[in-house]
Image (cartoon, rainbow, N blue to C red; front, side, top):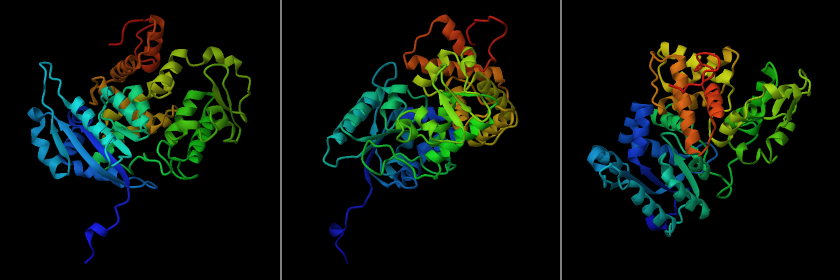
Length: 421
């Protein structure tokens, strides 16, 4: 019989998991109560899914598994987490306003792990709380990978500081067992370097180029650069770093071929099919997207859709809610297909983002919601994202924002400048 002490160490990336239970559970309850229940009662399932990694990834060894929860409210879930190998840290409310000690306990434990002898390579923080932005900055400064698991709206600075984010809809899909695969998050060659997929693989630059070509060749005219870039990044998020080694979006567009061309002028930049349209785009300047749209999509994660596309999303969402679509994933797919059929193509990830935004802003996904009510809730979410990003607008810009984000459904008449309900 072999000596267990002589066995080689298990391979895998050394990782640590820190879960802000209250934050994640509350966020999931607003999105999908069934997923929230699975999160609370079966942490082993989704933790093992993340540990296994995706195609082409190394597996992970979670050397540290910590869960921070308020025992007064959530003590009934403690056995599920201890059974799954988590260390559960009680964080009761310490103030009259209900603020718990989760933040300070999580930060202290994470800093201990950062300086520990195990040399943790990847830190997972399951929380949408932007208070952890400074902690993630410390991880990055120490050249460690960081993945944020979000179950709610994530502040832009917090998102950008992390190496990767497991979005709410992806996490819900993992919890519900409907995910086709775990998002590819860990690089295969060196910490801090983005993972690149093989050419021709799902999510590769080849697929992104095909998506942009299909968009441009099917469009009734030139499309804005932001819309084309959003389509490419949806197909291959790794392009966000340096556009596949080309540095800039324009240089990447120049090499995809088949008559697809790009010009940065007039603002906000345009992509077109040179086989069907003239490169004389100066006439588009007065018809281009208002500057407010470019600012918002650049600074926040709001999808770079046109007002017409947003409007169609709300109309399609209203129709599909009337049909009582079975689950959130099927709802997003059905709305996406309906928008394509209506001549306003949008990506499924953009639809998911809008649906989440509606829920975050207090809107419901009931069959009683009208397209205008959905648009109003989404617009409140966009305004909140802008507030979190410290964006400031004058009255004219605020009105332009509402007209764009609301898809034209919030105006009751010419010159209406009233606040969104």
